[in-house]
Length: 256
Ligand SMILES: O=C(O)CCC(=O)C(=O)O
Ligand SMILES: [Fe+2]
Image (cartoon, rainbow, N blue to C red; front, side, top):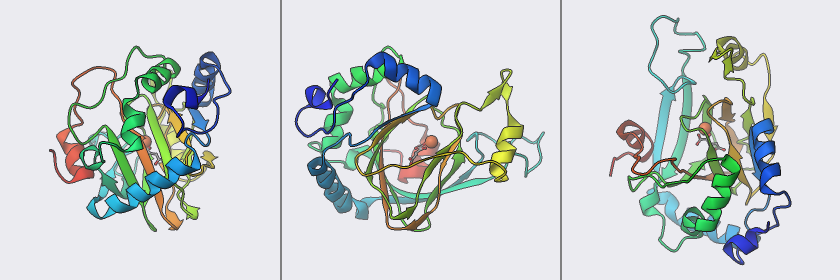
């Protein structure tokens, strides 16, 4: 299937695999990478758009445990269950992205939504009910990083608009969260103590990634040089879902 045939001329290379192959690959590897999902003209347009929007971005610094859940007092502070991770980044919410942006065209495309839902093996995909959370542009400058975590949602779709020069690497451990149906704290501890290394993904401007971040712990290492700009396309499986007010406050600095 060709992305051009799905969306039109601004899209890059052909998708060589069929839907079934992609489903199997996502299931096995926990991640799908579409290199050069966008052609260089569209990437340049998006880089310029992101640059113009950046002064409006909200800077956040957040602390959480890898499960992004409440402190559990039956574990110690330094346990993998409670240990504090940190993320610093800047973020543009969906309402600030121009209506005619290629990002909105991608997000709202019926054909592309159908393509994503086929790969993800879900019925339908819906936007967030609130006006901030459906598409986000995330900026990681020197010193910014995304600490180890499991996502709340089963899957995440990202588009790398601009890669940094050094650092800012996506690293993950595939499908390791549960062992016999229970949280595998021991593996998380080894990861947080840097006793084992995950799979590192080498990505470039214009790459689209789909990953199952709910069962695969992941991080983005600190940006050492340059700037990393990454878009998340956030969908729900049902209509009318809003991101929690707490998360909106943390990442956008407001709830509406
Ligand atoms: O920046 C990335 O590549 C990953 C983003 C991510 O893990 C998230 O938004 O939950
Ligand atoms: Fe994540």
